[in-house]
Amino acid sequence: MTAGVEIENLHKSFGLRGRAVPVLTGLDFVQRDGITVVLGPSGCGKTTLLRLIAGMEAPDAGAVRVRGRTGMVFQEPRLMPWLTAAQNVAFGQRRGRCDSARLLALTGLAGFDDALPHQLSGGMRQRVALARALANGPSLVLMDEPFAALDQHTREGMQDLLLDVQRTTGMNVLLVTHSLDEALYLGDRVVVLNRGRIAADHSVPRTFGRRTREPDRELARHIRTEMHREEQ
Amino acid sequence: MTQTAERAPAPTQVPGPVPDEAASPARARPVVRTLARARHGVVVTLAVVGLWWLVSALHLRSAYVLPPPSRVWSSAVAMTASGELLGHVVTSFGRVLAGFAIAFLLAFVVGVLALLLPRLYAYLSPALDFLKNVPPLALIPLLILWFGIGETPKLIVIVLTAFFPMSMSITKGLRSCGQDLLDVGTSLHFSRVRTFALIQLPHALPDVLVGMRISLGYAWRALVGAEMFAAASGLGYLIVDAGQMSRADRVIVGIVAIGLVGVATDRLFALVVRRTLRWGIDDSWR
Image: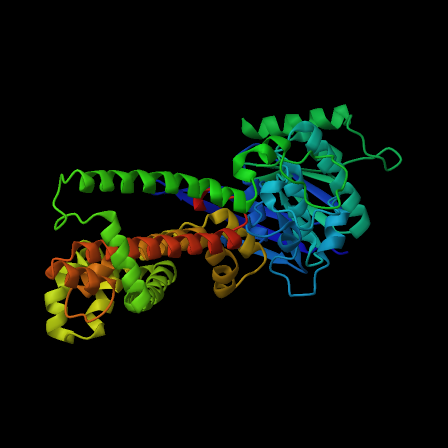
């Protein structure tokens, strides 16, 4: 699937006590196929960038061009508490156009169709949220620190699930995180965002195409230095 | 709340409650639960009637002021057998339902207005605040002057009484939907109408139903006041008429009938709500 996000000279600021606080300052970005991770410290504008791409915010200046359908996974599952897992997956889709059972099975929740959100654990709710994001057959899934609220064990399981789903569906992913380990494990490409701009852009090398939880120390040190340098 | 282990094998059905919860009275079968609750009511009723009988038997109050339970029972049986009591109940019930339905429609419209057109609602809000603080009974002389002595003044009193709790609750429910859920709609490119119908309205449902339940009780309480003026039937009329005839036994029958019908309506409403709301807020409807 061809990813379809192009961003040119993007500016966005928010009002705080009567003055404008710039968040994104002239950001340029083109999405490539695969999993792109936007990495940056808290408050650097990662979530704002995703919200602009998803159309939840309007830019002050610049252009955001999105081609094709997108799905969105938030930091919290944000499921409708009055709907079952299957109904949440099909939420907003035309009747009969969404195979909830297949998507729940794809995300490891076969048999939980009739479960209400409060009957599921945090990780399971986030799986439902991922299935919901896949319901309209998106070419790009936007993920806003989707595993940040989970414990380490669950988080690693969800990361592997995401990789499985990405391989199965061929979807492209734009994921933001503040975790360097997560970025290097998941990302085919890691974009470092700081002070409202892209500070660095790395392709993550894979030995024989395999991912490892032991990241390339040299690359990790290099990215950390770049992030640190930007903050000074 | 039942939490399921993250790596649990896929079940054939949704996991049920944990054993501790299963053993608790709250999870007992509905019939057993209802009987357990009814037991408390029966004990209190027997205590009150017993005390009443004792006061009557010892002649601490004259039978003219406080008739014995036996006389009230005889009156109730006679009024039921003649169909008089049922006639009053049906008339009052009709008035309450009509007033309640009109109040709900108005409250819902005001709630939607507050959500979708807040600038227009800002003009309406001071008038509503003013009316909210005026007891509907205080309007009765004016209402009779304007609308005569027919059904309209009675209906307006019930509507005004039932409207405000419902309006506040519906408005609060519709306006309190969090941005987190609204963002989901935005990410799915929902129109304003779809956001309202699929997110804000279902989110507001618990508040809407709480407001309806409170207002239903208020509507019953307003009934006597509404039927005090120029009515020829209804439980309020029964009480006022019996009072003027110094028939305390019939007054008590009327009061008990209002209470019983009110409780029955409330429990029926709660039952419907419990069946409707499944997402873990059952406790507030017991």
